[in-house]
Length: 62
Image 1: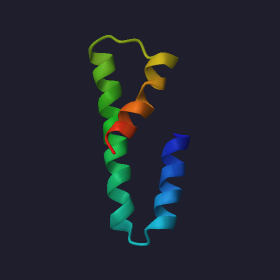
Image 2: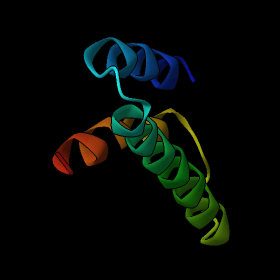
Image 3: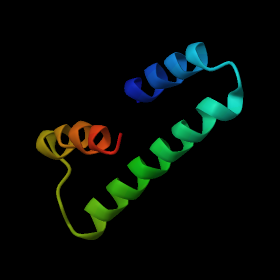
């Protein structure tokens, strides 16, 4: 949650138009919900290792 808030602050500072920073946040939130839903659906236990794997996946998308 802290990363989402930090990203919102940085995007707000860099882009004055709301449309330029709201869409990336919306996509990030959707991706997080979808990822946790898929982990739950496939029975993967959510632990520190599973959560630590998210930043490389998100940075690979850029």
